[in-house]
Length: 236
Image (tube, rainbow, N blue to C red; front, side, top):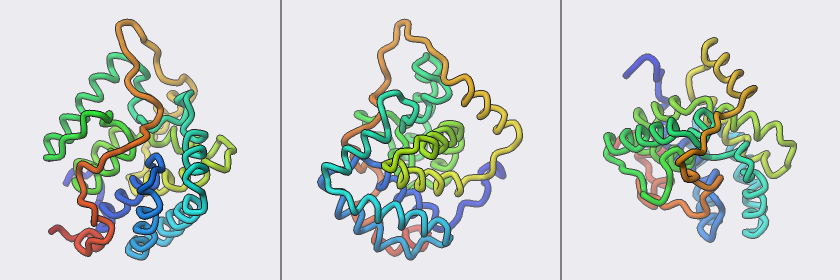
């Protein structure tokens, strides 16, 4: 394992699966999935992670389906300041972003989990789903998009909207599970936050909407959250 990846906690697959569920656009499956998350939370090892995710799950469970959908749209707004498509933060809608998306697709395929065609590979719930079934490659792609993760986390905390609170807690959990940022990474993050993503629209079509209303489950079986092998971090 590369030293840059750091040690992958045994419960990382479960943690990433839970975070993927909590960051999806709410639909008719959401209440049952939130129930599965609640049942799986005792297997999360770190108390701080467990508490953050429990609070987020409770707040989302308290919303009606319509209110949950409205809250999601209000949080991940159309300005893309709080986009779930992480390569946007570094590359904007530029050709460089297209290359970054191709590199992510290649990483998924190399790990044996090609992404669904109808979703971009930098969509955070999909990336977390990938990390739940391919921990080392998944951790690597999350670290490659670390600036996007950190900027999204910061934006969720700064928005002041109550709707953003549970999602900010989820991002706190995802970022807390990755190695600490070094001085060079912090400086790059500071510049990105100050300057914003680059702009280049010539010859490009928009890459994606700010959020997806339906994410398939291409990687994990339906019983992932209740599978003892995954709850303990053991391989099947």
